[in-house]
Structure formats: structure tokens, C-alpha cells
Image (cartoon, rainbow, N blue to C red; front, top):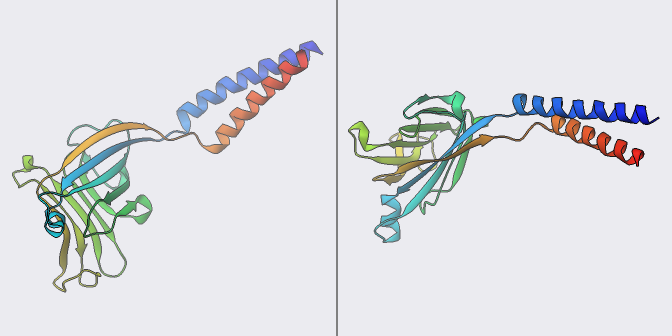
Length: 196
């Protein structure tokens, strides 16, 4: 009986080690988070202040991006924008199938079709491109709720902006792998209790 318990315990340990190895290699997806911050001129005018901070968060697939690497929709996970006193906070996700074009930690262009003939967009460009540094967020298209009827309306405009990479990491393992891992650990505990 003791041999059977020892064999069961050994099998559980082997299963646990192999499962942990599989889980570490096959069930994680790397991501990188980039924070945007800028001074919204339109917001400051509306508030009667000298400056008005707005922020954004861009999440990209992949952990090892390099400066000015060209990015496209395959890299995009989500983008959120908040802080404006003229424009509602919002989030665009991969499920929205947006247009996305960027250079890592530099130029950004994101556009989401709202399905009514209008598009929500965000664009940022650094001064290194020879343009005035800035960003713009707004709606375009003649049928948008803020449309002027001439095809374009910008709700927020900024005279600067910065991007900061705040970290990269991995998503958690898939639930099935976690359950198998817990089962193997439970088997080890039960076999130990029977020995005592």
C-alpha cells in the first residue's frame, strides 16, 4: 500500500512539473502598456485655466517593441482616453476592429467606425517629425453627433503630449491549465495525508 501511495505521489509531482512548464510556455500572451498625457487647449479655454491635463492608455500585444517600430492592427489591444471637459471618456478595444497605425513610443493614429457614417479618432505626433507637437481627438463624418456638416470636427486639441512606456507583462494562464495544476497539487496533499 505504501508503494502505491509513493508511486501516486511521484506521478503527481511529475504531472505538476510538466504542467507548470507547459503553462509557462503555451498559455501566456505578452503585452506592453504606453501612457499618454497632454495639455488640452480647448479644454483649458472652456475651463478658463492656463492648462488642462488629459490622459490616455494604449495597450499593445508583444513585450519587446523597439523605438519607432511600425505598428498596425495586429499589435492593438485597447486604447482609452479621459480627463476632457468637452469630450466623454471612452475606450476602443480590438473587438471594435479599429484602424490603427503607429510607430512605437512615437506617432499614433487610431480610428473607430461608429456605424452611422462617422468616425471617432485620436492622433498624436511628436515635434521630431518637423510638425508642431500635438494631438487631436474628435469625430469625423457628416452624420456624427458633433458634426458641423463639413465632414470634420475636433473636440479636443493639444499643443503637446508625451508617451511613457510603463511596463510589459504576461496575461494569466488559461483556466483549464490552472484547474489541472490545482488537481495535481490536491493529489499530492491527499497522498501525504494517507501516509501519515
